[in-house]
Image 1 (tube, helix red, strand yellow):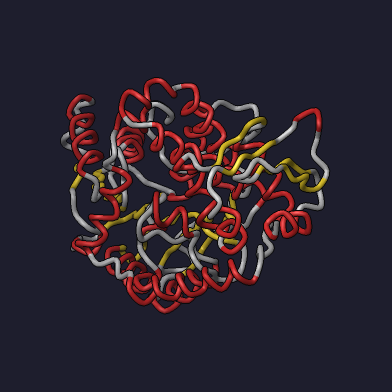
Image 2 (cartoon, rainbow, N blue to C red):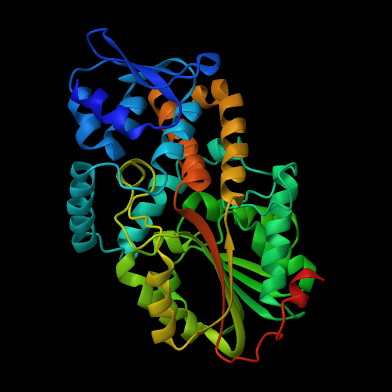
Length: 396
């Protein structure tokens, strides 16, 4: 089988057993008998689909139940695959299809306000109950900050919040904007700690409703306001602007629009902080399975794609930090909690949905552990001397 010959060239470290749709088994690489991974293909079409376009069809086959593990787990295999593939290109056919689809998506995918609302609703309005099964109590649906691997998810998310707040160098009574505020907990934490006026914006109906209710419960109505509007519709000035895990939804065609808007909204002595997933590689096409099934209109940029629009806006990069393995740890925690709550998930959704979200969490974890994905924290200002000259203030 062509697929088996291709896989044997690809897997130089470890291996697995592949059973085709006719029941014939192939040894790929050198399988670990102590932790044997055996994959079963149920459809003949996968024999060539997985050769020509594995980036899409592997996840699709797993989601649809047409590929399953007779032994070992999805995570075991993804770890093995990404260890062997790393940041390299899989094969010319896969790359050609990605290039074509990526170019088509770039030409047709305009994340205007209406489209952005639809993209957000597709993922973030699925169900609060689903996300609350695996998120921490502060509902942080973004990369945590682990000072060591043994820290709990709860502590690591608190670390992240404090790290961001320190980088913003917030002063009491300042006016703060949170673009893509999620369920509102970062905005609430800032308001409580610094007695600030905080405005959060989201396009998610579920997040807006939850945040608004929580603000009332905490009696923060006079300090925190959540608005269900697009960042392009804001027309106020702010001392500090923060955006965590939202830039991935802006769209490549709107990077200049985003940073120009941040410049317009930021006071002359203001500070902004962007926390976004990105790639350490050259610009490349979006991951097709994630784009099709999880994040419509999403894209994780290379640093070079962000730098130009920042410079043309007039903003200054005053600090840049790369969080490397932190998101892999975060996703590992989320995945563990998701799998432990399988019965609860299946009470809300069907088996196919469960497999889809398992693949989403497991594949993203592997991409941050072995692939090109990292998190960039980019501090922005209009003046060179707006923030202190050293990083000491962040770690006090």
